[in-house]
Image (cartoon, rainbow, N blue to C red; front, side, top):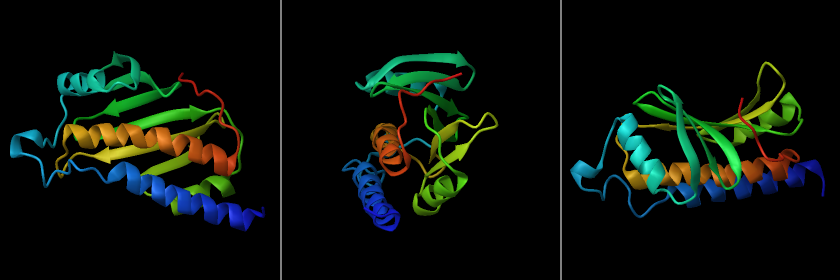
Amino acid sequence: MNTLTLGRNCVAVALLAVLVTTLSPHSPVQAADDDVVDKLTPRKLERIMNSFNDVKRFKEVKENYYTFEIDGFKVILFNDGVALELLTVLDTKTTLTKLNEWNRKMRFSKAYLDKDGDVILAHSLDLTGGVTEENVKTFLASMVVLRPLLKKCYGSVGTGRTR
């Protein structure tokens, strides 16, 4: 399979993955007003994380900074109250050209090289329009879909690690 065909296949799979993980029957429009929040307190975030069966070893490292494992890999979570950001370090080597290709094709996630040359996969959720607990869980689940997709399209990712 040539690179162009692989790239097109990855884009099709990526779009399908994003659609599947973002289309939830529990959208904010269908939720009761008191179920929609536009800010997540640390206490509410911890309750949501602990109710999510796939999240293991969730712990607060310092204010607004958490670590946990999901689907066997380590993830860092930042919560500034109005947005959530997930980060995971991928054990792979790739080029900036390939990462730029990923970033051009994907929405709501990005992949980049950090200052040490490690590949980082980041995924963000803006809370300012309001979200439900189900939206947060769907956001977490999308990382499980995006990580192997990046692996398939751009190389082996290994087990992930946090610093």
